[in-house]
Image (cartoon, rainbow, N blue to C red; front, side, top):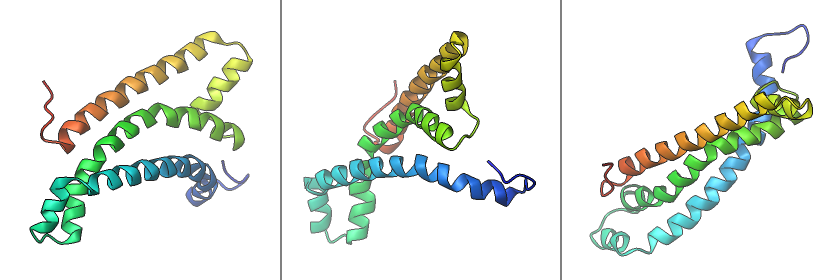
Amino acid sequence: MYTIGDGSFWDYVRHLIAPSLVLGLVTVALWSRYMRSSMLEVIHQDYVRTARAKGASEWVVLTRHAIRNALLPMITVAGLQLPTLLSGALVTETVFTWPGMGRLFLDSLSYRDYPVVMGVLMLSAVLVLIGNMLADILYAVADPRIRLD
């Protein structure tokens, strides 16, 4: 986590680069594939063609019409990624020897500390519920046709 004898802020940041890249690049790769396929599907819809026919610039067509509708599948993926980040942190914390929830889970499994294992699994279940709830709320924000009743 830090160089022995040096506990400065920049030393922590320097040691944080590799773990954050490991966690972030996997997520970015997944999200870019979903966004690409969603945009390819949305670009060929009638309302995008109509916006182009009205004379809107390509930037306006993409930002106001295409991206807004292409974000709906991305919201679902992002809502499900919240607990996945915890399990991804399990591997990252083990490889880079960072203390955290993932490392606690693995250590508890090896020491057969079942109450801690159950607590971490319960937290993961709560994160799934929170992620799904946030996805539902963001659906209503992104698409005005969807109402939360």
